[in-house]
Length: 563
Image (tube, rainbow, N blue to C red; front, side, top):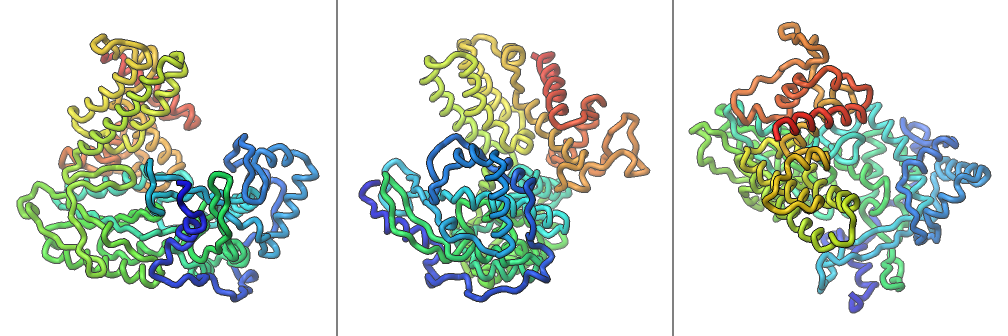
């Protein structure tokens, strides 16, 4: 690492998205007078706004200073002082009212982290950006205000799951997989096209961003113009710093506002898909197309027409596509007319590769949705970590070893289990063996000795079958209680449909009737089925925390009774 020139490394990161464009500043010099007519602008900040923003920021006891020389730990110590707190609030009001941010707060320190053990090129480094803490406080205040405005006016596309309250990658993939399963359940096939934006966050032209949010969403760009203007960065490595370089494109890396600004910039992308369903998570873009008997002869033309629209959108918005990383996968139904279907999908004249497995947001999808490739990869990662834990086991007692096991291994099983947890028994047994191996590590039980009862009684762990049910019902609870809004038509109370009622209270209407086992594995159907089988006392929990506690206790009892 020491052989790399820091200035060259800084230039590489600064102009990484300017390889095919000039390196002039993408932010114009015009001054905007839009403040008076904008629906969203910040004019007055209260003490409670500053307190809430600081409370919501990530705190740390590290005393290393930011680029302006201020450590978060220091702010934690002095913010409780009334006079200083009032001074910070007064300063924040001046910044928002005048649309101005001091230049020294907009300098970013970049720490290069090697992607490989022995980096040999500039591309082998990943930049970690560190922003000034006072600016992060302003950003958190702004984010709280603009999030409320976006939610109240339903501005963000429902197709966008990234960086939104209560939404996650899991909800994005539930939407995609339920769409695919329902297509196959109806006797149709489905095609998923994954589109990759090249250096997406670094490519955003700043003037176009301000124009779009001002004209399309009536958001004042006065303060944001100062936020994006005159931004500099430097590389810091081994107590050595590079020279400053001015960034000319992109939303600021390491910032709090960067993700929401990016989401607003690509917010109109789904409008260009006319024949399919769109799922976005930040810059991860997936498009699903149903193939039926009525459109089997035209679906290829329809998909390519939509891809042409996406290519045109990327050109108009100066967001280049990485065509070589764009791929598509076909999920065929069992109907004879869909067997051996051949499709050609192209973007900008480049034919996309058809793959048998596709990784989306960390979930590996295969053509038949067996989840075997994903589970095999998951088990491989888990066993690698278990082997590492065995090496350090002598240095920890059982309690600390259990904490490490939960955080390093068991937590991996939680991710997307609400989707891959519907796999067949042979696949689920692979994951169950992982849990058993981890339990033997923690409890010191030999390989062939019984462990199932100890998993329940001594560790209180749920096996994969019940872990799936646990996370499934947590999501259903959030929807029923209005905490999750991305599945509005899935879970309706029993009085919502006059022709279908349940005797049990708090039951949900069955408004989806699958024809196949794949359809029965949808989040939609399984969620209703599992919810209606829950005791009323659990469904009627007064809070999410109480629901989780009661549900886990209930599932552990069921699991123990079958051991």
